[in-house]
Image 1 (cartoon, one colour):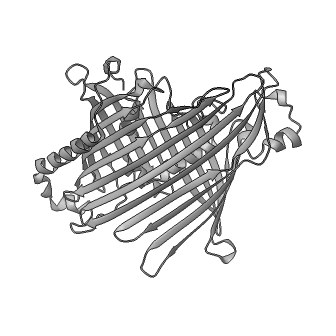
Image 2: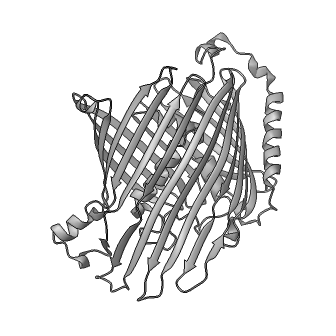
Length: 475
């Protein structure tokens, strides 16, 4: 699963955002003109898919995976690539090990928005994705979730998230108990514990959720979570009498670190919508290093995020999804003893759209366009504030075969045009690629997909870009 040496070549000149829009639209048009024969379909193939005239209401995208990732970056600071106390901040979006094709590798080799949408609907399942990053490294993500009935209205829940990338080195198990119809109300209560190797980092979550329908046959789901971060920090160091010099770093919070998150979903026959929002309170923590004698400092941290998605099926075979996300992380470090203090604000804003046009129940054309802004503001101790601008456009057009059961395939053109500014000039480039995938989907819920990625910018000499593999199962 290794790529060639195309990465060592200088990046081609950038492409404007509107040019990217036009290129993706032209490719989608070519697909539509090139495959008219796909409208013909045998009775056997049709029996494995939805009826010919049925409205295409399958989820095209979701923001659940995005919101979970931001939430996890807050709960599991230990799992960040550079660690809990890194000067790179909470999101750690810029890594010198990244190259100008890294973002394209993530978007092309791991789960796509449609797969995330299907995963979000599964109460029980397992999925894994791995994609070649460079000669010695493979990006990989593992998700597992299981619900087991205990007794009456009580269920045991377990989840696990593993991530190996250039922004995270994470292994995060979570266990919880769910109590349905609490005290005869329509509410469901859930209590969960995030398990960490470092005891003081354990988090406790309490959630309330309910679902209902209104008179117009719309379904609604509301969930509210509150999390106590590093919930046992004070109990371990104060109640149990653990000495500060027994650990690499000792944390002393001025107040309880808390965070809250809300999710609202609505759906009808031809549309669905999502709203995700969350924030942590501004937390003050004094960090000392008794074992090593490093200079202490006081750190202030806060994370907030907001995302909305709307999907509509205006025609039986056409589905559109529009979405926008915003996430911000603030870090302020006061280090008078060392003079290494700083303030950092990381912000990521994405506005995007996806569309799916069914040619017949087996085949579809999918297009995607996203505009991403990653501004960052950093002020070193005693220095002037520096602003960094990072802008990018991502486009994708794909011809997809995806039955309810049977062979699957995908042929996709992808484009990433990014201007990373002075903060990370090595990420500035325009990259174009071709994705070829094949797999099989079983009626049992198991699915396997393997793919190859091709570099269109250097197709004449270093065309092979890497390989990837995904598998998932739901039950």
